[in-house]
Image: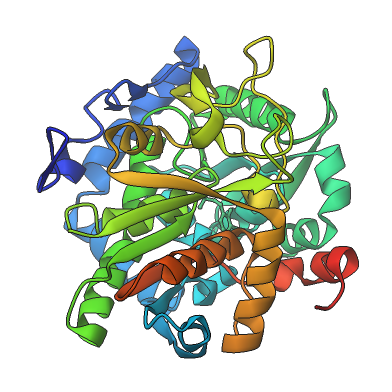
Length: 406
Ligand SMILES: *Cc1c(COP(=O)(O)O)cnc(C)c1O
């Protein structure tokens, strides 16, 4: 399929380019020391990860340890309640081991670390979800694991800090600046620059310098590849629309990778939080402008000094002031439509899916559920496939405390 002069038959092979560009987005804007380390990862990825041995081992792990393939569920009662005849389906990444899609790329990254002979994996975490997924992968492979986390986040996210420690990871408290995600990113990068001979940095989404947006997309594409085949098996046709929430964009890119070359409408859903004012949302693709942060060029939300703006969402996994460079590219091309869902719509969808289907979704995923419901209300027929990126156990206490039982 040719769309806006881009040939999607060969898209996944041709994008990103060898130096990591999706059009003008992506690239690698980092210090010369880190550049050396990234070249090493790039080279390893292009050789090791394409080998039969690596692919077979990762397939076995996905089956035996992660519990893949995750199913697709027909959301029958939810579809009936909308009443337009449109049928909703969910790809169940909430049933992936550890409760979300993040383990898909962490297992890939940690397996690569093992093949490269590294002893340690390093990462930062904000809400702790990436830290837990990486600590899980590190325990599986017997790698050391250092997770950098702001002091403020450590206090806020006690259950995830406990999980990481139980899994054997070292949680390194970061006390610089505001003591949150941004400072944790800087501290993790600094540690990696010191330790890259023995360690590998593992990013939490389709973000960061090349080759991470490529690697994480490819490791997550198992979601879209499985989903396309399962959906065809179940219904005999393709879905009319596919929906996923976008924070950094990894669960969305994984799902979209399976459908980019199909006549399927694709929607990425960003968090509108409390409203459209800067600081009240994290809808970077909708309201942001081109800029470089954390080592890559993308579309980002900036403050008056051009620095990453403060962002907010009820879903802590979505409050990042940019999105992966591939999303910026697909946004400009128009191949994927990006739209927004606010906090209230999200919490409504959280309860609706729980009550009608017996599935408690993560608040992040509830953004995609809310948008899927909206779409189904406006369409006259057809089907919508929602990527249910994770389960809501981690969010229950917070939802009850803040919103009560509806
Ligand atoms: C982290 C997280 C997200 C957001 O990350 P992406 O890279 O945008 O996918 C979405 N859903 C869940 C359940 C998460 O834990």
